[in-house]
Image (cartoon, rainbow, N blue to C red; front, top):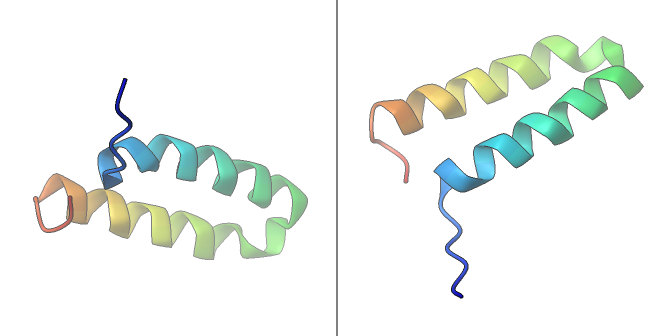
Length: 49
C-alpha cells in the first residue's frame, strides 16, 4: 500500500483542520476560509497538484 500525498488528498484534511481552528479561534475564520478557497480553486484549475 503506497501513500501518495497530493494536494487533492490533503484538501479534506486541511478543511477539517481549518474547521476545528475556526471553532477555536473564530476571529480568524475569514482568513481560514479565504486560504482554503484559494487553494481549492488552484487545484480545480490544475495549477497545483
